[in-house]
Image (cartoon, helix red, strand yellow):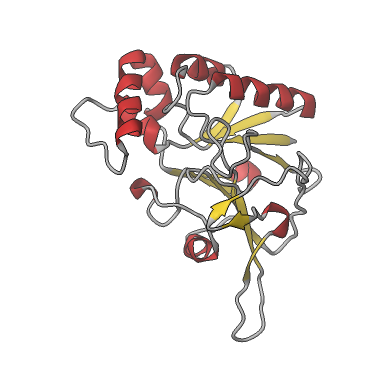
Length: 238
């Protein structure tokens, strides 16, 4: 089975259409949503409608989903002025049914046994505070709360992945960044590497734990304008 893991669509219908076309090409069977279907861009209703047509087997809420679907007096924490304006505008566009789709009975994190995975928009330790997974330090905190072989998250819009080995030499760190997913940095900022192929394959080895921050469909922040998402292939174990 092939499962497409999508995150941070952010009301970008053009990007979502391209990603879903790629999913059809890859013969995806089921879908998982890591939240922030709405926010920032101009087509929240269209993106929600497109997501409702998918066979989504697991869904967690994102911070933009939560703030856009809550009442007007719900505190909008940690947003800059532009993001806050986008949330307030999005609230006005959505009807109650659409708001319910993105947050009603949608948890901050969830275990999905069918793919032996845990889903979260932000971090496993305190998902409702909207922390980020950027580096090994954040990954180490996340692995403490990860009781499944795989964890998928988003929120940062920058793809990065880590593996925790079951055994390591005394004094060594069992957590390593998966080099296939490494994003090059210059002067503290990510730089697009267009020499890399569109598809980066990671072999999933038994006995290890994996943490994938899958990046963003609708608003990449790694200076690579291409949408990012993940495909878990349970037959190939990739």
